[in-house]
Length: 300
Image (tube, rainbow, N blue to C red; front, side, top):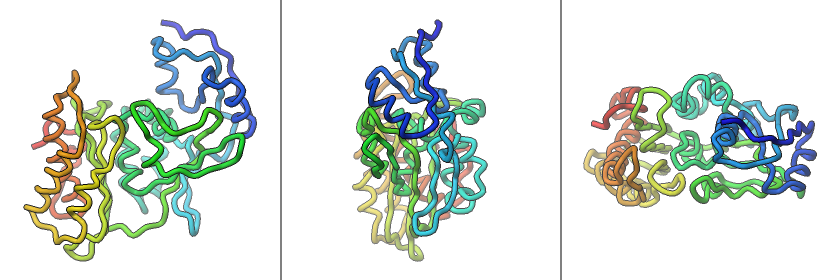
């Protein structure tokens, strides 16, 4: 199929871009990497007559550390920018690792972190680890700038809390204590597969006692979700194998998976149980978790 006719705008500033989005409303879409937007237009899944490109807007691709704020990731940074960032590899290697298992190299070269977030796909690979790290989003609109926790930004399948005139400009990972964080994914192929289940964790531990934990699940609910019951069960406890098993079972009970062509709901629940334990073992360095577990053909 061919892409339908559309008008293309390439504003030089965020202010110009937000004015265009406000003017054209539902007719307009933001174009950054285009790896999701353009195929949907070509396949007739998305009808839009206006594209507002961010290509000429500067200072949206940097990945930098700002004292007192944390790591700031520009929304136009590509997935491979995350993979190759020495700053992320030093401070939050789990983000680089999550980006590395996203899609394939061609998509990672073009697709942007902002697009991955705003698409609000329940199986997306970046939101789980970013939510585990308490990521905050900066949004720019005609009335100025606002900050929203990523956890509250994703509200349903392909739905997010962005206003029609707003543009996601930055993702901020605030300074925080962390013993370790990680994201593990199960897909049906070694490369380019959507997650059937994804589990991210970020833990603060003192010795073998967990002081704080975030456990985030993807592809098992209408949107990326925290397993808060599992987090509470883990917090304040000394880690044991029975405890990890109970935490995994609790996370499995909290999720709300569906059955589809890629998996049954029951299988997804069991994967959540297994991968929750696995990601916690990796974060706490209790045993070697093979890297192929990120995109394994089987969970056991």
